[in-house]
Image 1 (tube, helix red, strand yellow):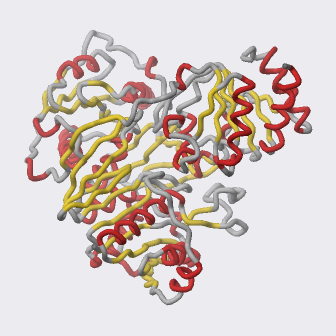
Image 2 (cartoon, chains in turn brown, blue):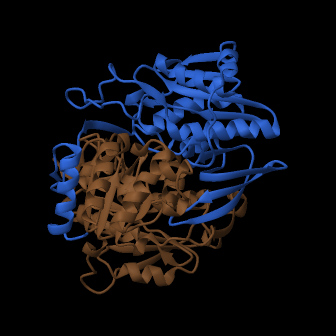
Image 3 (tube, chains in turn brown, purple):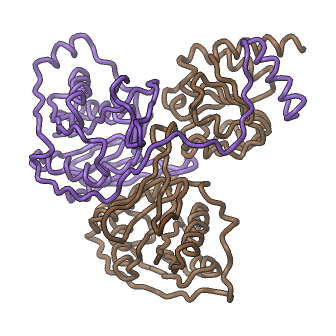
Length: 327
Length: 256
């Protein structure tokens, strides 16, 4: 299978999920006895191209253009459409980043093709690729296959593959081939302005050894003091999944997950968190995970060392009582 | 300003999911349905834009007959009329075919702005807004946290990863995918619910749109994932499980 890997950088810095997707692409190439071409696009990105050419690839396409200096969905999809037509891959792989989800469906549709996004895994069976992605917020998985002719476009979720498993080039470096694309300023309808961060993060959850995290199961902000009490007794910081911060029940800087912080504490205690992939990617590096959830099929139990299927409004007060007893 | 907003009906968040034999889809017969939560943020944003700039909000939903309930809820919150794209087999559509159907159904509406939620809580492909933009020939932006409209163009705050944001400018008409949490969605008032009864819902049968049956992808099977980590489940009464968990965290995992 002929694979085209689209890497991602912003302002000369890698989005590291690119290397995870590279590892996945190398694995598929090996299984299908195919070939791998990677693409680096932007402006002034030749050093990045050299860096990725040191990995096991057949070829690297370096696509540079003034209009690619800043990301725009029009610029990137028009460019990559030309690259795909030039490289004629069977499968185009991308890391599932916020940027990719912004342009890759457009790119696919402009080619009249579909995209299977946000895959966590794949299987190669009977000469066919089956992509695995989560549905129903992680409560089920789904096997999804392409229909119709190549090229097919798929994206892999962050931490679906290990970047350190990407193999280096056998003979030093893959050939770097510059590819020129046609792009005119009037084709780009988005005007990208400045990048910025909101107010400095008040708490650095990445440094906390113990985190107690709450999800929808907490039901109402009035129930948070109970969890704060537990956090105090146990010496932990309180954090949450996205919906809790969206509701304003906890500040945004206490959000764990793909749009919040990534943490790896000694203990992560998940209360009423279902464990959607967007949350799990932010905490699955935790040393010990304990989860309390009333749904025994909640995906949080996938990553939990200790699980309690039960009502957090009964278990948390019991935990508080037990800890107070010990003092 | 004429605003279209796509709202999807999905299984209720606390609905017990049972998978049909063979794994083609979930068993829909005994569960409740509700408006996809990310779409309620898009609806709220469209109502606020209408309140600020005037105009009309049209709620668009595709699905079986029950999907009309989601349109009715949007009308009760303040949308002016609805478009129901009827299809009993909607769950089988791939993202591109869904978007082609919606695009075909609304192309003559000539919306100034078309809003979608970030993704659906059922299939979660998260592609509809971007695909609609491409199919309708409009510019787009996704993961929007703020919309300022000034003289025919928009200044938008996009969320990027790891706490970063970006301002972008976009002309109108355009398609925007709204990030969850951008606003606080309102509840329908009794007055709104009464008023909604007089509002129009146009039904278009998807089969009549002439969208070719050309799937680009197919869900082969849905299933409960196999566990990858061995979880030790602690059972018993709340007091017992609390004591056991603390004991294990202290002496087995040694993290307390």
